[in-house]
Image (tube, rainbow, N blue to C red):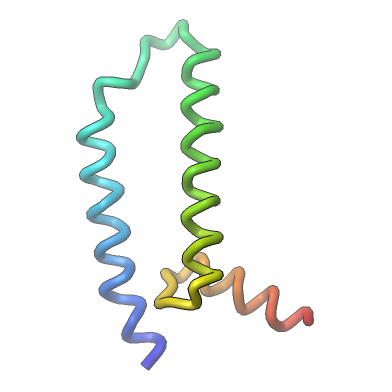
Length: 77
């Protein structure tokens, strides 16, 4: 059952990425603003890592990447 619960989670995750990319399209700066682009990269990475940590902590249906990390961590305990 765990394998089939990944399908809706993956679809929802991919749709939310596409929608957010469309919404945040105006934030992409010109190529010479490297510091601004780097700040956006760091902020996005922090938000994503916080979301993954909450998802793993809640033990809900995981997408394939997070499920692999969780399985790897559990196997090392």
